[in-house]
Length: 521
Image (tube, rainbow, N blue to C red):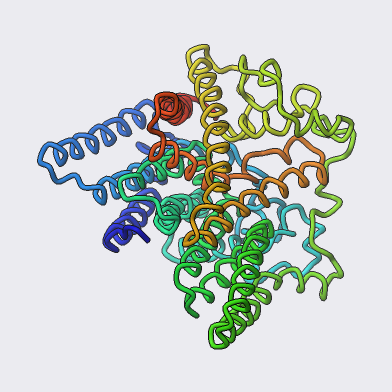
């Protein structure tokens, strides 16, 4: 790596995240701070602004004193990003903007409830994985790592006397931690990708303040843990490319294996890992160094021995016990007559480039109905900012901010995606020392785009185009944003940089205003 941050930056960031998560768990039960237990939202907004302005004031004081280093700025951004997540969790309960959330009835009841909350409750209540066919209950077909962790967290709270309803509301605390830790892991990815220190802040902005990262912080499903482990897999693979040690290969295997044990789509990273492994194996064979070739083959065996059993454990269990193959079970599939069914539309209308009239800027929210909107990319941008909400009673002022954020996000994503793909293809030809890393990052994104496109046809419903299936794309958008800011020096490219930076500010700032004053209860 061209630069290396002091380890204390990571340590301070992680400590800040966990302290703020604990504070959130405490404040969830406070009638003056938690909407769920009766807090006045206006008071929350005042408190948020007070803390935010106080933080900005302290930053400015350090700036005037000449002690606001890049490392301090990073800790401030991580802390402020966690603060935003913290207030989102306090603003929104476990029933708001959830995907397949489900219900709970409590520890003393024999009920088996559906959804992710019901799945968590089952493990918490009966102290074991489902002993019936998990494909008979909605949500139970997911691998259980996230649900086990949440069940343990519920048990800990019950043991120390937390009321059960509050304990379930606190299911958002682990997901808040996962979402915040994504910032720390992304910082590692930026460093391993060779981003210079002064541009690390640019690459961190989306993971710190993107609205979908806030929504995932307050989610109760397994999406955000799967994202964290996917990011960790990317980070550790980049670290292995730099230093091909046994420790790094073990960490790749663990992060990929446990990622698949959280959600199977984490396996998308396996394709680009396999490509990098193949490229390095070919290099070892051509180089003729038998010791290097031996170590390479041993490491690949170690990777397979660790990753495959962990990653496929739940799949094998379901095949052996219930004869069920992986996938979405038939009862969970939406009927073809559903308003969300997109199977009757052409391939181009689903994944083709939408016209400006098809973007629906006038009301940039996802209506679920395929007849209203069935283009994957339009739905992707709508749900990326505002999840699957369709607020018919939103006032004109907030709608204006939502429209600005929506248009800005399309501009930002288009420019940074094109820049990322073009610049990294160029790097493949120019930069020998970074070729493996460039290959890995570029093809991880390509495989992700191809996989997502196939998914929306395999499961032809508007909900399949939800941004939650592509949240990891923020890694590559961030890397493209870094390229825009570090390498654009000409007259035209400077204007591109200014416009892209303005689009970033409008995307994050306007969407945050919408969430702050948007009453979803």
